[in-house]
Amino acid sequence: MIRFFIFWLLLLPVFIFSQNKKQKVVALSFVQLQDSMSINPKPVLLKIETDWCVYCKMQEAQILKNDSLQQLLSSNFYFVKMDAESKEDIKFNGRTYSFHAVNKVHYLAETLGTESGKLAYPVMIVLDNNYQVLYRNHGMVQSKDLYKILTLVKTGVTKKNK
Image 1 (cartoon, rainbow, N blue to C red):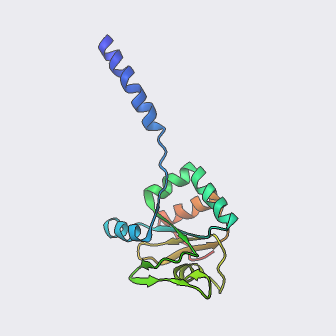
Image 2: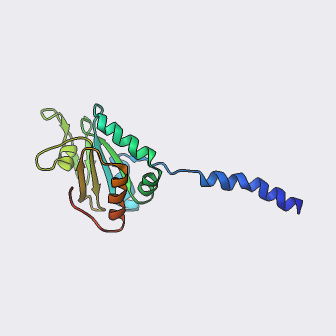
Image 3: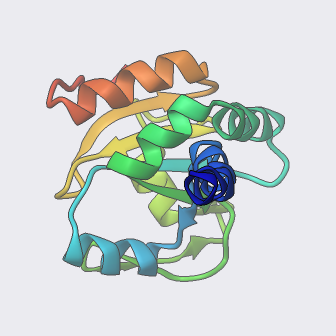
């Protein structure tokens, strides 16, 4: 009986600590996204941001502090962050996109993020398994609203653009 008690006493911390582990969403690069999609296709949440954008940093903080959103993202989506002013070429969906010095914005950010001729940061875009835009929003999205949107995408109910 004492051995049984000691056995469970030793296992108790394992159960407690395993329950407290929070899944943190990890942002993938476009190369990692392509590799991951070839193995296990899932919808993609793409966040287009800039270094100087205060709202982009606020959006990031909202994503990081919401545990249920983190769980939903890490289990059902790929998460990619893109600097709209990146000077690096990006291969995406069979094409190579580069920085436009004249517009001072990356062509991929412009291609995916522009709606009705405007591009405002942050841009939150949900893409399906074939990289088709299911949802696009310019500016901040409250974490509870983002959770609802991603839940709709996960269950197959989508809205093209907000």
